[in-house]
Length: 91
View 1 (cartoon, rainbow, N blue to C red):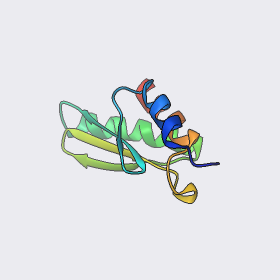
View 2: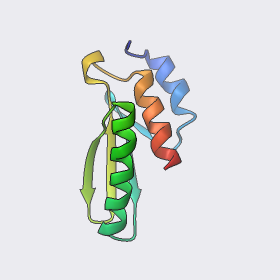
View 3: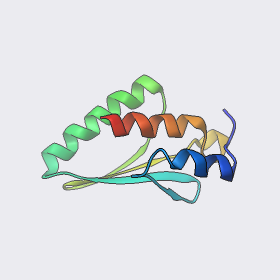
View 4: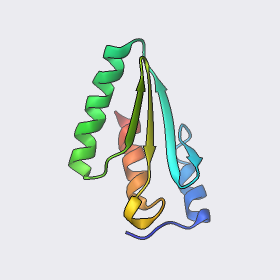
């Protein structure tokens, strides 16, 4: 899959208002009431990531989950990252 150009990334970000651009990564932090709720969400993300064969980096801090997406073998963001971000938003 080809790495997206800056203008393509900006256009796609418009449909994902909760996500930010951090270098060559898409990133979003979500808040939950406690660790158990955060882990339940992470498990849903894990299932979706396995189905898509595209896995985010996940950082868990009690009730906060930070997800980071990039396509390592393309050296930056691809359509796959934006598809996964949309899937995560629907969870």
